[in-house]
Length: 122
Image 1: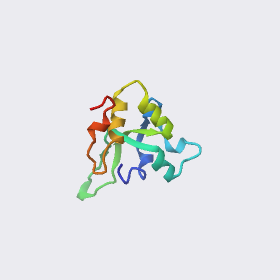
Image 2 (image 1 turned 180 degrees about the vertical axis):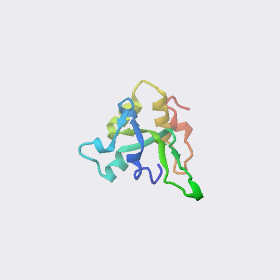
Image 3 (image 1 turned 90 degrees about the vertical axis):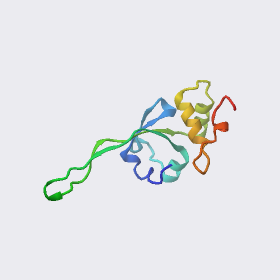
Image 4 (image 1 turned 120 degrees about the horizontal axis):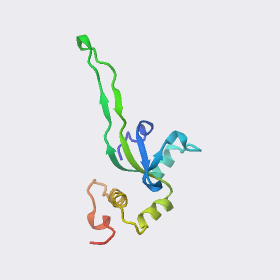
C-alpha cells in the first residue's frame, strides 16, 4: 500500500468489494475509524481509474493550481477479518476475488507468490 494512501483517502473514489462495490466514504462511517483501525481493516485492492488533473498555464508562464478532472477510482476491501475470509472462501470465483487473492499473497519484496495465490492449487 502506498504510504500516502491513508492521507489521500478522502480524495479518492473508493468502492468496497466486500459489499458489491458499494461506495466507501470515510466521512459517512459512524463512528469514524481511527488510523490504526483503517490500517488493520482496509485493504487497497486495485486502482481502476487513475486520477486526471488539469493545470492551466496563463500569460507570462503563470501556473494555476491543478484542477481535478476525474478523481482516482480505487477498489478497497473494508471489513473485519471474518468478512474478508468469507469473501475469499466463497464458492464464487470472480475476478475481484482473484485480484484480492493476488494482493493478499504478495511477498514483502512486492513479487507475487503465484503458487499460494491461486485457489485451485499449483
